[in-house]
Length: 265
Image (cartoon, rainbow, N blue to C red; front, side, top):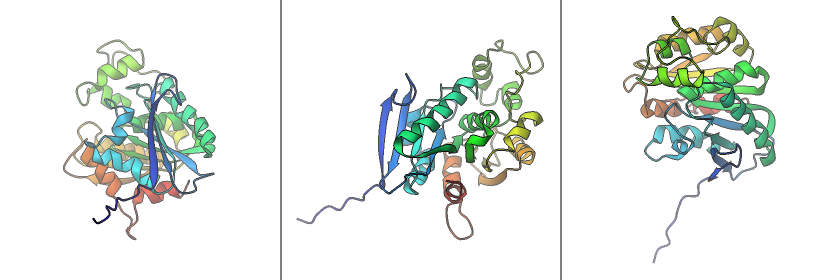
């Protein structure tokens, strides 16, 4: 009988509860090569998602984002980040907890690399605003960035309620009735000015996104000096757009996302 040859995955995956933050699910990908001294890649999930979605076989685009960095030799970590918290202080603290925890695995802890999907990108931007010296580089896929636009227009049909709950604002309120607290919106010029002092940012967006409007991405990119790339022209705010982010290549055929982050790892 011929031997069955199975491909060797170049990294291990473990899923647990409370290993990093009490009461929260966590996912850790560890490459089989020598990664000592490299910076950890932190993953931030979307509003209605969970840690497990980074390894959900039905979300191949999202899976590809984290897997690509693990394959490139980086430790990759995700936690629940306190759920649909829209960049509130708990989510920011959770990201910093991952940074510190990564040191127990042999990673550098001075700065992190960050990949955020939708709301997860917003969480990362708020972390950059709070700790601009602790982010080496960030990639946002279909990246939420303007809390006023998303909240006021209830983009996606449930964002307004979740944002108001996360920030302790009155139900049904908008910026015209109950303004956001100070320093809670990356697209505020004062907040953007701080983010601009942090690591470089790559924002990958869909030209037909009706939740994170392309105009908000390009406007924000101008405020912080971020690089932008079109990852989708047909699917909108979707896993397919995340797959497009993972598939973007440089002129030499290398992964744009991996090369961008690895240059600062």
